[in-house]
Length: 51
Image 1 (spheres, rainbow, N blue to C red):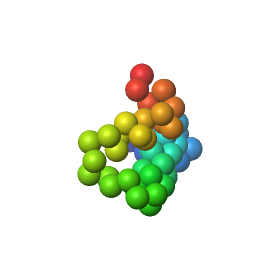
Image 2 (tube, rainbow, N blue to C red):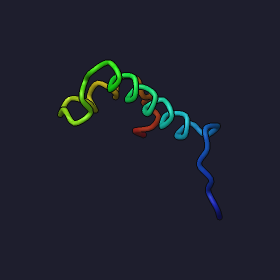
Image 3 (cartoon, rainbow, N blue to C red):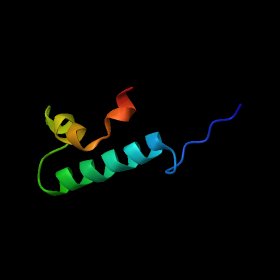
Image 4 (spheres, helix red, strand yellow):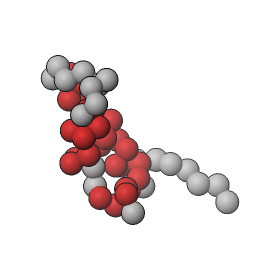
């Protein structure tokens, strides 16, 4: 069975959201190498990705 990841799948949508939020946060001046960078992204990712 071949599984294809795309933006119509919930996990693909969550990944696209995470990338968009990360880019926005980085563009606002918060360096992506800071330890709290991922913590700033997590509130914007749907909980279903963690199930």
